[in-house]
Image 1 (tube, rainbow, N blue to C red):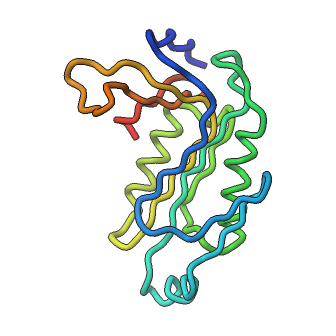
Image 2 (spheres, rainbow, N blue to C red; image 1 turned 135 degrees about the vertical axis):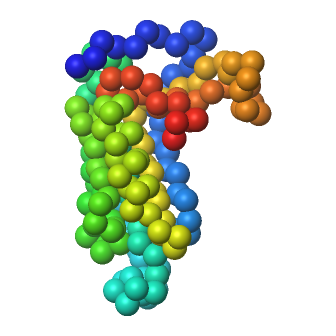
Length: 165
């Protein structure tokens, strides 16, 4: 494993759960620790006939940071449960990815983004879910951040900035 990255100066970090959806999404409901996907009416039939887009998910959750950062409860489970619920509902396209704990490295997350991006078509949906540590740091002079802060996700072996996502 790569050595941990140095702390980011002036950063604020905490646990975060976020989802980025690029396109209209299936409805997703969370009850307690469980996720339930409710595909839009006719989605399965449209996908089978080639009329509708596909849904791709990259779900990342890190509970065990192996000393890189403090461990968190349930975050890996959240990522796996969302993936499992969407897969069980028939909503996910082949090529969707779930990465938890030791799998959630900088290289693996970047590779998953690239693999999914290579498969996306114009009517497809990309859904990125992350559950783990994240934070903010002061933006540099050439930043395009309106709030003057750069956001980042803490992966198993480094930091993924919002500009990379």
